Amino acid sequence: MFDAVIRNGIVVDGTRAKPFAACVYLQNGKIAEITAEEGLPARAIYDAAGHIVAPGFVDIHSHSDVSYLVTPTLEAKLIGGVTFELVGQCGISPIPTCARNLEATLLNQSSVLPVSELSPETFPARDVSGYIEAVRRRGVSINLGAMVGHGTLRSYVVGWDMRPLTPAELEEMCDLLDRMLAQGAAGVSLGLIYPPGSCCDTAEIEALARVVARRGKLLAVHMRNENKGVFDALDEMVGVALRTGVKLEISHLKLMGRPQWGRADELLAKIDLARAHGARIHCDQYPYTSSSSALTSCFPRWVMDGGYAALVERLRDDATFARIVEGGLPTMYDRCDPEDITISSMPLADRPDCLGKSLPQIAESMGLPLLEGVRRLLIECGGRVQCLYKCMDEGDLLRIMARRDICTCSDGAAYDLHRSFGKQHPRYTGSFPRFLRLAREKRLMPLEDAVYKITGLPAALMGADDRFGRIRPGLDATLTVFDAETIADRATYAEPTLPPVGIDFVLVNGELVLDHGRFTGNRPGRVFAL
Image (cartoon, rainbow, N blue to C red; front, side, top):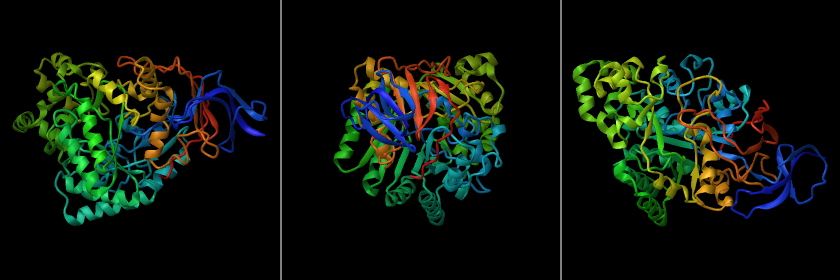
């Protein structure tokens, strides 16, 4: 007798094969048999009611590293059909840590988790092995894989010193990365606009890339620039990929700022040309025209030397603030007008009156000019202000989305939907249903291609398609059942916690974790060593 069967469904198997009617039988957490025969005995029967049976959705770019501490269901992602998240992105991972970087590293994880709930006691992991074990002990409803952040590696070696590494320090960082990869990290991520990794040069990136390439793993990059310098930033990473042979994943591919709008074909052609010359380049994208980033990402790099406490002291000094303004704060205008920048969270300040407000609105409420208002807000919030930037063109978004070789991602973290914590981006809950809705409504591609972009493709890029991301006997029984005609996002910028519609069942490793919007409480997930 089988453990379970999903019957009366249309299988879209994650390989771009045409949909077909079949029953999917499960045994011992694996897919056991795929057949048209409905009468085989099974302990549990799930009726797909003519809907789509697909591999569980794979979020290849996520920030849910510490979310399991407060929401082990990872419900903000699970309600959207996500069954696997690759965390540790944009150079910002909670591991590895030592005495030098522990406090700052945990604070860097506070964008969706209250600082009071993050401590060396609540998050005891210090390396990849420790992280795998910590999640196992706590339990989690979906599967995870972990990248190691370059910024975290760097702070382990030299703290938040924004300077070039010495040859000995660079060797120490590469050795540390190699140990983390050996423990099961999927690769290394770069966040080249975020301190402390943002001060590195290309040679430092190449050194890391060579370590990753030797291990056959993934180098993910939030590039140095995604607005007026995006083509130069892409050139830098293409050069790294060509010289090192590393498998490169360009994170959340986009064109920010009105002067770049309409150039998606040019950007994609540049990537295709690099591939033709031998570069192993892949990309992911979230399906929204607003981005989310720290307000300090608009600042010149030197401002963050020494960390956030040093930043606040610099902001307090009039002469230094004048240098900040002259040297880079107006780069916010390269992304969008200040009216299109709104506050999403302030982890170190209790200012609910600011959430969802634009920078000019907040400055006006303070009775200050715009930049002085920004200055006061950052001082009051200890430098930690997260913003939404309405900065992209829908035409570019859809042009990139229509490529079947570009993964969909969320670039968001799971958080507790039942308590207020900022005004988060709707991509946290809505990315995958939104992508499937847009693919349907805009006729971007056949359903089998859309499913491939969120299952088989990202699993293959991680070298894990022999474990998940496809529906095949012997692979993990991790599946999402949904109605292709009605699946849609409901989360908005005003109400980001609204759940999507059209998802029936989600099973992880053979266990039911979501049943028509109801969380079962089962925690069969684990952290995969990749």
